[in-house]
Image (cartoon, rainbow, N blue to C red; front, side):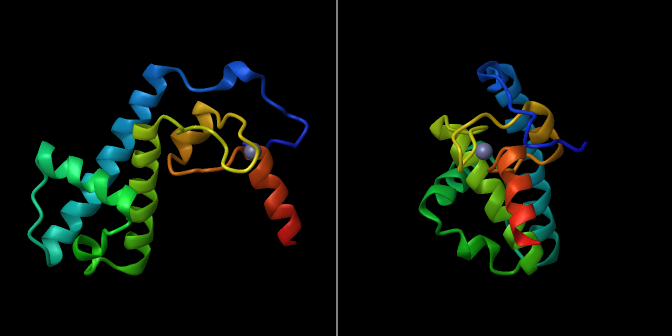
Length: 130
Ligand SMILES: [Zn+2]
């Protein structure tokens, strides 16, 4: 799982459509289970295709407070990231590093579907932090 900054990826490491779809499903599942937890504890959220679409719209507008108010901070943060990721999928820039614009690999995204940076930039950032 360790990669060095020398492991620069070729351009063809960008996600294929079917990979984006698999990651979309994964994110959607996580979103639904988070919302279900919220529902179980406090809220009356029932996901149907229309509300799902709203959830994605909310990700774009950032106005997800009403539905996430009762979630624990950690869950709320995760929910926020998931919605952002779904928003990026819909905008077509999912899987692109927010720092260098390079590809984030499918392998990395399957492990961490909300990742916004490629492994190189992530590693660099963590090294700077030390
Ligand atoms: Zn990068």
